[in-house]
Each structure stands twice: as structure tokens, then as C-alpha cells.
Length: 356
Image (cartoon, rainbow, N blue to C red; front, top):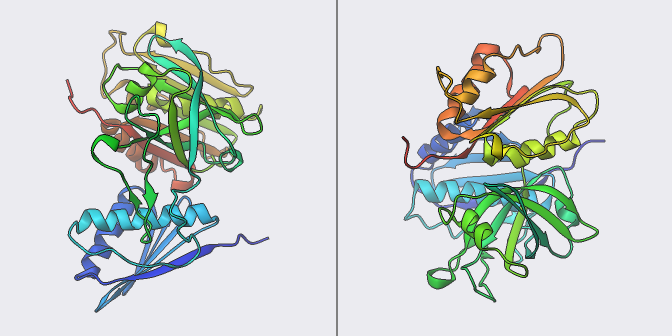
């Protein structure tokens, strides 16, 4: 049965819209998305849907599409945010027709309260967050956008959604921080989700929230984000602490017949935590305190030792890494190994702001 695609359309009066379309196309190409350009028309395919851009003398026609109402809302925000970044002074007060109508709330907005707090290792803390109506998150997308209010604020002012599809964020002492996290486990019926936080003190809103968390603290989320892994008989996972919750969840849900490798980089042996799996995937921990000589980085080097059996099996390679590792890993899989975009994905999970 064919999948129903929901769409929304708008017109934005922007000068030099042709140049903006090219900029948007280049951005999505750099993230290995399928971009098709034909004259004034450009169609961009992403994991949750599509963007269709048409250049006119009086501006830009935009169509976004996805399989769900929430997906349409997310696609609206994605393209408006990209245009806003390219032309900060432009008037993007557009109105959309079609699916994903604005209710004034962010997609699947939910308030959550902190419950059980569990330290998994010296630098990893799990918070169980309780909320209502979580069924929308019990789906293929395992990531959420966590909205973190100022510490100690009992009644936060949450962001709203404007008619053009962009969030409107409170400022000043009501500023809300947002970070993407993985739902490590959940029970929608019981009304809870587990989120694992890398602990590095007050250096970052997510870590600070986890460090100071106490039962009853309020937080919120929107989403879900991401898409399901494709079916494969052989998998390769690679990532550091920031990707560990996602790798752990994928391993927990992997079928018994799947073989492959999971490489997880952490600081030292004390940072190892349980990542059970019923699959045949071999889990290997890599330690930064190991004095081994590196040619590139821990993850880049170990990935290059693996023989990916893509000519004889259905394979999929996945990496969640620091920014400097992203492009080399992506290029190795796509160009050196010859995997197509449906058989591999590398993502930047964080960026080192003070490189050594």
C-alpha cells in the first residue's frame, strides 16, 4: 500500500531566491541528501520527507512533505531556519497552506518531571523522566529535542510556534536551552522515558541539568527525531560517549541474526557500562587513556580495520562522532568502500570547542 505524503506550501517574497535555492541545495548535498535540480525547480529528499523549491522573479515557492503532521511541521521549521540563517534581515512572515497547521505549540510538546536518578559510570547519569501521553514517542525515531529551563524555575515559559513554522523562544531570565538526546528506553503506557547524560560538570546545559537534577525538576521535549535503521544482516556502529545511548538502544533492539561490530570510545575502563544485545554484534571498547599510536583518531583507525562485507551481505554502517571525525568516516564509507547513502550514515554528535 503506497505511503500517503502530507504536504504544505507557501510563497516567500525574497530577492535573489535563485542564489538562496543553490545555497540550500549545497547545504543538503553536504549532508549526503538527494538533491535534484531542473531549471527553476529543486527537490531535496531527507530522511523524513522532502522540500521542493521553485525560483520566481518575485520570490520563492516552497513545498514541504512528510508522512506525518509532525514531520511536516519539522520540515517547515527546517527550511525557514535555513533561509533565516542565509538572510537574517529578510521578512519570513509567510503563511502555509495544507498540512501541519500551527497550534501554537511545538511538535508533540510534552512536559516531563525527573524521577529516578541512576549513575551508570563516573561520567554517565541516567534520568527517568515522567510525563503523559507518550505514545507519539514510541516510534522509529529514537531522538528528542530536550528543552531545559533555567535552574530552579518552577513555571518555565515554554517556546511557542509561529505561523511561519519557526519556534518563538523566550529570552532573558526565561531563556530555554535545547539539546538533542536519545531515548535510551521507555514505557509509554507507564509514562516514562530514560535519558542518559554525559556528565562534564556545568560545561553545557544538558550536563548541568543532569548534575543538579533532583526528583520533581521540570523539563520538556519535542520530537521525535531521526529515522529507523534499515534492515541489514551485518551492522557496524561507531561512536563516543555522546553516541553511546543510541548505540546501546540499537544493540538492545537488534535481531538475533545480525552480526557485525560496535566500537565505543570512552575515557577509560571505568566508563564502560552494560550494553546488552541478543544479536551477534561484537562490542569493542576503545579507551582514550590507552597510549597507542594513532594515525588519524581512535574511531577512524579502528573503522579502517574492518572488512565490510557489502558485496555478499546486506550491510549498514552508522557513526555518531565529533565533528573532525565525521567527514573522514563519511568519505571512507562512501568513496573508499563504495557504500551508497542507503547503506551508511555518519553524523556529527558534538564539536570540540577548545581542541588540544
